[in-house]
Image (tube, rainbow, N blue to C red):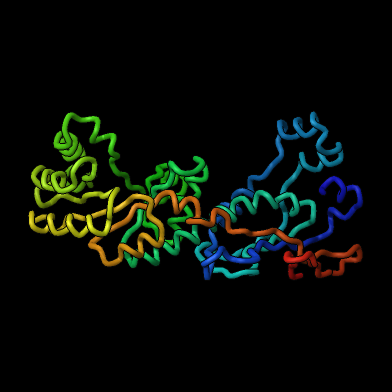
Length: 330
């Protein structure tokens, strides 16, 4: 497109592109914007270096005129957008990119790859935050997605109300508060569950959270309180009937005097599972797979469409597609 537009002379016409979603995922009544900040930084840094130019030349992807243009590419237009965390609906113009056709058209994949991913995570995360009803959530999905997507997902989840992430790179890069947990492998490493608990308590203190469902939950809770005392920070449940187990563990902790010990639940939670736990004595949730995959909607379905451009005499012209089921608004 760029090569042909440079050839025709239309590449330097001023244009307006809009990012929007034609529809929301099934069952959703709103979407949430995320990724705008990352888009701005990505556009600022978007360049074609010597290696990229050499590859395009070697494979004859575009001609020399286009390569010369790309070698000096800098976006000099304007970008307007919704603030991150804002609600949006179908056809909402979430991002408006103003610039020449040459400058703006080449940003399409860059912009959509960020906005579609981050807004999908934000939309799912917002529903989970609503279902949690003020109980804190930790983003724990790094093992279920691409390593860079994991960092972006942690950022998007934080925007919509998740309090912390287990992804330390998201903490370093974006300042998202971090929190961790021990895995079953830590318990299995030690000769007994008691030794594992003791090692964690000695190293991290009474405020740590112990994973209590490796073997027998009731026995583990009793041993955890025996070792840590009633000041034990928390326990984590990661399997079984979480509603029933949370009630049993809460009763057991209270009977042992650990009335302030928190109960955190994990295990393939989504907004529906979190809502089902609303009446259970749960103090917080750790959410992974469903969050970082958009809870059934892994993309926000956004598109990047030209809505206006100037004629050769400088007059603005509204443009729109008339394609069946894919019409756009100028």
